[in-house]
Length: 145
Image (cartoon, rainbow, N blue to C red; front, top):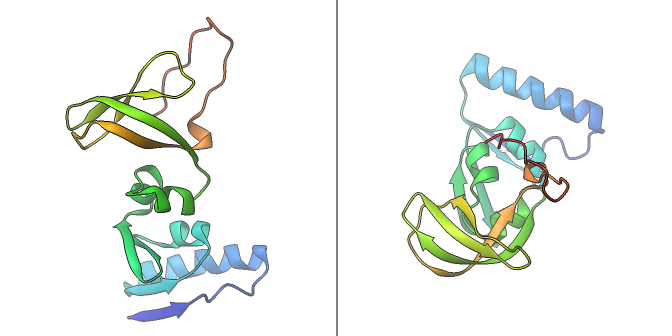
């Protein structure tokens, strides 16, 4: 097991990127389990197969980098990892795989992936890269995910 505590924190950006790639290659070649402590979210997501997001000694979520980024477990993870627009919404229907939500300021409900069945007040995390802006009446492009 390899234990690393902020090993790249004092490196310039270019050297940090090269060091991340070197570490990924080392992990792959040697097959060593690595515990990597960092406060840099990009670093955590880029060098890890699994990530544990902690705050004040409490684990908020454990998962793959994609799970952590795309499906944050709570408001802390959504806000802490990457850039997020956090919107207030109301869940009006939920079937265990999707929910129908009403977001303040939008004139129609949205259907979104959702694993719960609870109705009522909620917060919705929207990543900037998932926002498309187009003219009223123009056809929206098909979703990428």
